[in-house]
Length: 145
Image 1 (cartoon, rainbow, N blue to C red):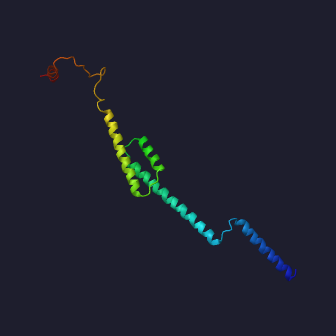
Image 2 (image 1 turned 120 degrees about the vertical axis):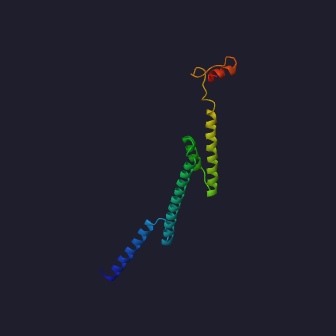
């Protein structure tokens, strides 16, 4: 092999390497752009992780606020929260306060619906129908006076 053949061989190898580099880099991006894209992906992954962590913290805070509420209300509140996008912590705190007040309302409604249902009813021992007699006499008989 003479010197010109070696030079041609080296030039051919360099061309092959450049073509292979172009084929493997379909985007044709310069090295600095590749690095920037890599950094952006890393930051995006980090920000998604932070957002997920913040969302988990908010779900935990919501569940603590609704500890006394029913399971169905908790599930509905979490489902509603996941549909929302809070621009700031103040927006989330407003949502949390609304859910707390709604939970208190539901608890009060549940309590109100039970009122008066613990009195004896016809057919239940302890129930006596009023026979139209003198109520005071009945009371005195019961008190043994």
